[in-house]
Length: 370
Ligand code: OGA
Ligand code: NI
Image (cartoon, rainbow, N blue to C red; front, side):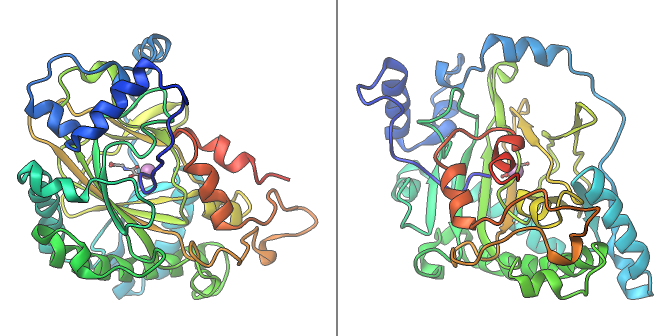
């Protein structure tokens, strides 16, 4: 998740590393700017602690794969079967890929192309979008947690907020991908609606349940750009984290790099042609009282010559109506199944999530445990 920002520096006096970060930020050119300048040794800000890198070498890659679910079956009275598959994947992996999902293939391709075009245009055209200002609906920057993190990640992000303090106007979007983004959000919203119906059924609730609760609606879209990294073994494209959402629908190109933490190892989420990655966020784990899982994931630094692109749509429901609390769904609570979490406001969760470094999920969810 890369949707927020911060303007504070971690040290009032400004240490040397803070000054380096500020200098990098001031270029407004992101990591792509470093690559374009021919950087061979990545700046210190991006280098992971030696202990973390050493641990990495002992990690084994398994042959396991995230489940792939064909949604075409919905049209052939196979709904029950699909609900079972989604339930099984959501209770274990917290991740699955969908095919025949209804989002037009040409739109997915145009979206990836649009993110390339935005990032690969003249840096002077991109600079006006480079900001950490929370009131802006469209913010381009590198590392939303740049000033709070031990290690920065090798990626740049164009973050789009559809329902901030004022709702998104198409002309706030970069010209090169404006129409595509608007159309893409519309189509992915439809898929999200279907998935929330399936997830409601997977929880034994009526199909409209999660939508009526207000989980539905895309709050933010992160268009991620991962340029080639000259020293990929020293850094990551995105650090280990879980998503602060109910659900995330992710479009990735064919390059690969996304990994999910499953059975104590990192498993590659291999791109499948025409597929979309779906993952459950922290809020769904809370309201399902731990039945469905929000699982940690990360992105390896890009070793390929071509930049990797992904587009994450975060369904966060009542993110702006912060007065409506969310907690474990009453129907799922019983004597044998006591609530694991207290009620929370999405706003309360967000302010904590974005005032610290991006990190693994337990820290995020723990604060709401009873
Ligand atoms: C995210 C995320 C994965 C990717 O933006 O939250 O996990 O493949 N992205 O870019
Ligand atoms: Ni994520």
